[in-house]
Image 1: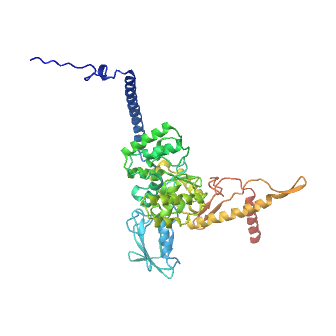
Image 2 (image 1 turned 180 degrees about the vertical axis):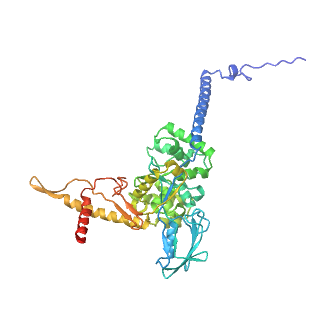
Image 3 (image 1 turned 45 degrees about the vertical axis):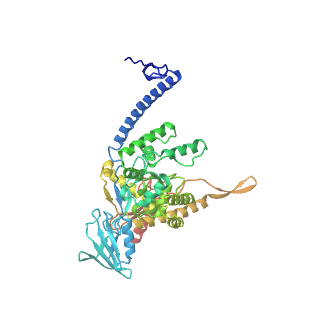
Length: 506
C-alpha cells in the first residue's frame, strides 16, 4: 500500500523563514540581528565593568576600610576623702569617660549608684588596674573610700577622652563603631528618612529610582533622592560627585556588587562610620559616633530619640542643616525624620510628639572648651617628632595627658569673654567722626584683629593644665602660645619688675 503526503506551500517548519531560522522579512531580520549584536555587546561591556569594579572593590576592602586612630585622654579626676561632691556628679564623670550603669556593657567599666554613695568597677580596657572601689558619701561629702577592704585617701576616676588624633591630610575626625554598638533608634532613624527598604533591596531600589527620575525630568524638581544607603556608600568610596548618567549606572553596578560581598549589617556599619556629619572648627565630622560626641558630648550608645533623629536629618545637607548655624532648619528636618519613623512604625505617634516638643540640646559650640584643638595639635607635634604617624594610629595608641577638662572649659570661656571686651575697646579706639562734605559721619578704621593666648600651668610640676592658642581655631591654627615671635614691648614688665625688686632689696 502506497501512502502519499503532500505538504502545502507556506506550512511546516520553514514557512515564513529563510536559511537557519531567520525570518524572510528583511525588517524583522535586521531587527533580530541588531538585537543580538546589542545583547552580545551589552554582555561583554557589563562583564568588563563588573570585573573592573570587582577588582577595585577587592583592593579597597583588602585592608581595614577606615584607619584606626590614636586617642588623647585628659587628666584623671581624683576624688579625695572629705571632698564635697555628690555621687551623681561622679557618675556623670564616669559616663562621659565611657562607663555604663550596667556591668559588662562597656570594656572600660561600670558603676552602680547607691543610697550612700557609688560603687565603681573598672573593666579590662580601663586606664586603672581592674580593682573596684566604693565611695561612701554622707551629706554631700566623701565619708570613706574603700577598695577590697582597704581604706584609701583618694581614688582616680577614669580619664575622659579629649579626641582622636585627626587625619592629617583631610583634617577629619572619626570614631569607629561596630554594628552591634549602634543603638537601634539610630538605625531606625536613618532607614526611615534615607532608605526604608534597605534590608529588602539588593543594593538599588529601582522603583524609587524611577520615581526620582520622573520627578527630575518631567516635573523639573527633585522631590526625593533615588540613592539607597549602598549607593551613597559606593559614590562616597569610589566615585566623584559629578552628576551624569554614566556615573549613576556605575554607582548602581558597584552597589549591587557590594551587596553580594557584604551583609546588610556590614554595609550599614561602613555607612555609619563614613557618612559626613558637618564641620567642627576646622575638622570634618565623619560618622555617627564622632557626631554624637561633637554635637551632644556623649557616646553614641547613650543617644536619645530626638538626638538620633537630628543626626539622621543632617545627612541630607550637613552644612545647610547645621544645628549651630541654622537651628530652625535642623529642628524642622529632625521633626520630619520623627514623622518618617512614625510612618515606618518604628515609633508610636505619642513618642514622636514628645520628641518633637524637645528643644535642641547641643554641646557648647565653643570648640576650645571640649576639644582643646591647640593643645591637641601641640601633643600631636610632640608625638610625631618621636613616633611614626601611621604607627601611632594603626596601633591605636592611648595618649594620656595633663589636660584638666574643667580648667580648659573655664579657660575657653574666659578667652571668649575677654576677646569680646578687647574687640569693643579696639572698635571704640578706631571709631572717629569724620567730616564728609558738609556732614559728619562715623567711620571705623580698618585694622588687624587682636590675638591672644592663655596657658594654665601646674606651678609645682610645670604640667600644662589648659591651653588656648588663639581667638578662633577654625579661622587660624597658629598656636600663639608657642609661636616663636620677637618679644618686643611685652618684655618690659619683666624688666621693670626685676628693677623694682632689686631696688627694694637694696
